Image 1 (spheres, rainbow, N blue to C red):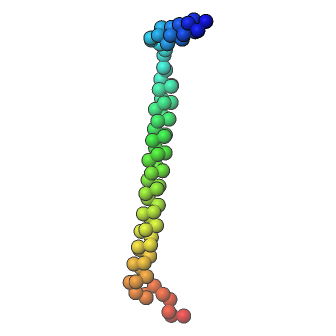
Image 2 (image 1 turned 60 degrees about the vertical axis):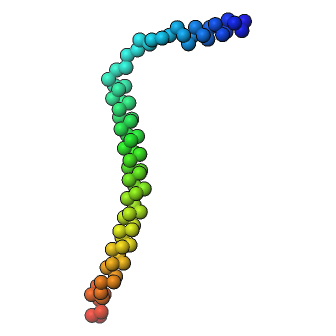
Image 3 (image 1 turned 180 degrees about the horizontal axis):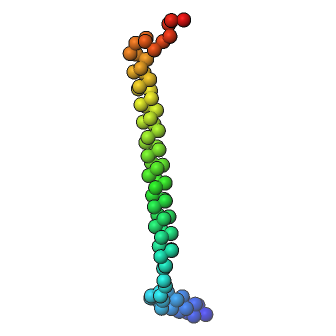
Length: 78
């Protein structure tokens, strides 16, 4: 019995050497769309991880620079 199962599994993996299948243009377009979507999401997430800390750094630098330039921004006329 064991030999029959082993022989069947061997024949199952050896015999189908080629597959006659058709992949239509709709499936190809879908695959391209999924790949582009995944790559876009990855690069947008990566850019968000880089951009937002830089944006906060720029805000801190320019705010600190604006506060040390002088007192012309305060309203002392009241």
